Image (cartoon, rainbow, N blue to C red; front, side, top):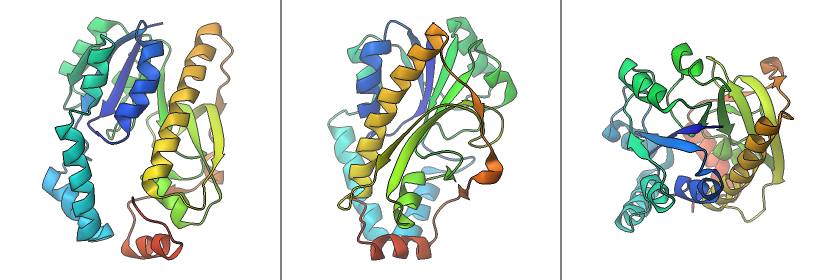
Length: 249
């Protein structure tokens, strides 16, 4: 089974995910496409301002410094791909005709979205015969939407999880095929939590690919009426997060 990954340019957590996944899946992986870490028509400056407005300029400066350090150390998804001889390419719009033509030439059987911030349209979803998987850092259908790790910690949850599901055109909706729960530790920062979540997601994806290949995968439609959805946090949510003793780093 040939696999193509759709992901985003994030140097703190995603390289670790791909370091866990690609050594096992390199023979099956035809390409890893990396899109900008922006939503809709957002610019880099827009994203920085929104983060600073919500979390404060001190946290924004700390995040910028960590990202800059990671880039100086050449920590990237592209470098992970190069180490295992997997093709990686930058992509602007995964729904564009040009991108779809490029992807079709690779003839992937399965697409896997890993933190890709773009909404997938029907021509992309129909491109791979085995479908398109997405990895979400929560126990769906709860905590759909953005930044589920933050929201679970801000709401005082004791357990978190990772879900893998077949994508449709709605947001965090489709058919669940794998899920794993794990505890949120009392001393967890958002940083430590995300590192652990990505490691668990990598392990779960490898198991899921194996289940798809041997025909044992089970698909269960997500019941969105029983779930919850969260958008970008406001300052009240950040205050609640900090009042519980949580920090970003």
